[in-house]
Length: 188
Image (tube, rainbow, N blue to C red):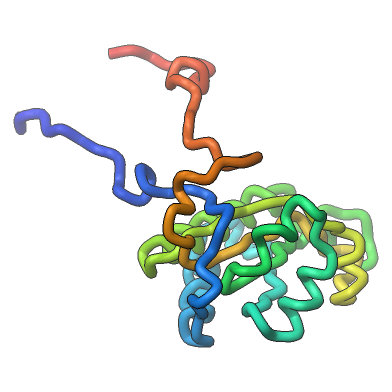
């Protein structure tokens, strides 16, 4: 039997944080945006349903301006400097019905965002996911049909120098102990 090896967390897991300040001089190219979206596209989903979509705004473009118009004051302070802003949508129902499209739509969207977040880290960027915006106004602004749900937003970009030291709602890197997140587990 091989000798036991010391297994460590991936650097992404240890280094990930949600910045409250982005470098306003850093921009994303269209190719970089496509790579991030491609990472989301490759995420697993129930039955390969891929029940997600994104409203994509690069800082300075019309979509970004339209998205930032619906931010809560608390997020408008820091989101505007992110190089990329995404509104994240889940395909909740079959069109013109109350039948669920996928009962796993929110979970699958989360998987897609996790893949995108990992890719952003690989590209030298960080992602701050948040909910401080008017979901109904975004849905109306972009004519999102009722069988889709605007769920969250993600601000993506290069953190400003010193951003890791800034704290605010949702930025703590402290985590509960393993025992507190484990419902049942066989030991041994």
